[in-house]
Length: 336
Image (cartoon, rainbow, N blue to C red):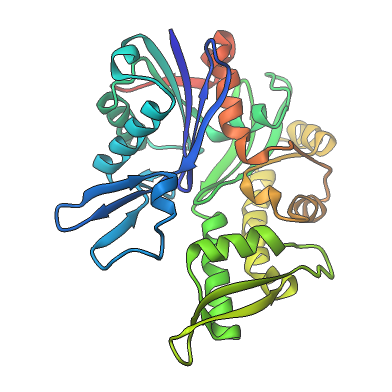
């Protein structure tokens, strides 16, 4: 029996095998390069992302998952089929498979139906769904129980989930279309307006990861290349950490506003428990310097973050897929 956990993210798709070969077996960009009027597929995953900003006029880089929604079913299916092939799973073997998909907090029945249709197209059987906050909590090493509520914030590429959960369900929570991609777009605008250089999404992501920081007085520096606004010629500029801090902080502050709304909805005893246990943080944004500390200070709570925070959701999904009792408590079966 093949057991899979899949986190089909707006930026990165991650797959965990929860059978004989336990562990994360794939993490690739959720993108497809297509060309021409027929949108012929040229590349998928890492190969497609390498082409971003470097393609000819009739080639487009498509992200089939946008802000948690499946916006291009054909390309999403082609992408997932290719990823399954890359981890050595042929379609014939999927007849005996169980798959757990992560979905955003409060996912609609329509979204689950879309994911179910995608799974069916890819040949996946016995499909279940679990909302991200449960999985993020498990992946961040929180102990879930009916009398042990856990407060978690997961910041993905296109979606952030904020919730207080227990094995009894989501006590209060929400998802919002804010994530690392917004920070990258903000950095692109900032460097163009203040430095006179147009850069692409890959360069913005690199700048964020290399020198992004919410630490007071952060001093990192990097050089970024692009196209000069004044002459349209290639050029480069030096960028300081302090110059892009606001590009990151504005979205973290917005997430904190929503986190406060979630906390305000808690019953008194749950609030007391959460205040004692702190906040569990996950997602790629937690790799940005001082983001976890900034969140914890703003919430006046201690924080917990695992070493590989970008893999917390799929790791939590893998843990659930291995444990039948846990899976029954947090997952729902496919509507198809």
